[in-house]
Length: 288
Image 1 (cartoon, rainbow, N blue to C red):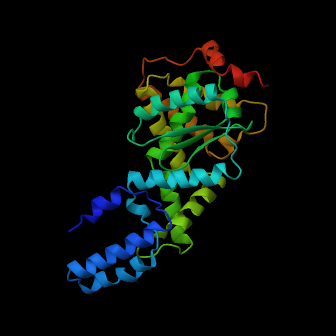
Image 2 (cartoon, rainbow, N blue to C red):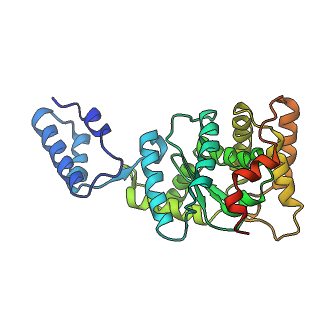
């Protein structure tokens, strides 16, 4: 008998439209022909034969989460998110991102770090390892440690599976969850809506800060980078940056970070060289 669990693991979370119904029918026929089904199992046959794609948000695997993140990413970059295509800047950001990802809570995800062409000071993350950083944020950071601190914070959101949990709450509130899960297309739609309509919760921000600070430290960057970047933005004469206005309780977060650093200080001081950082983003700065 075919091991269907192993068979399905070789395919994408979002199968091709022609392929899923074929597999569904095949599975249903195989079950009927080879197994004496108890009554509850018969309830699955109509679902299989209809070829419905469903998502179980509560126990989603890493593979499924990465596939969901990919679908959300496609929606974003094909609509209102314009990626910055400079290869040198993207390579630099990806280098920092990979270093941090390896030191994160979930190092086995296939992370994707992308620069968004937008002068607003903002960054965000979706599901499955997708992190986005505005060009305005790169230009505002004073050194690599500050930039790394923002990336680490966003990786912290992924480590805490914050978007997935928000999606589950929204699906429940809107009555979209069924006994079998959530329709895949609805899952993508909800994910995109949540990304576009932050803020995140106070609890999620503190958790992402905590996880991000640990990641930053394990990667060897100066812990002070996370605090100094937030302080810089708070004291700025410009209007409140999106990165702070969508991430509430910034003053309290700074205090919590300072306490965490005092409790577990690190001697690593990498990433504080402003000259080196400016040299790495010179093609971006030259556009100002």
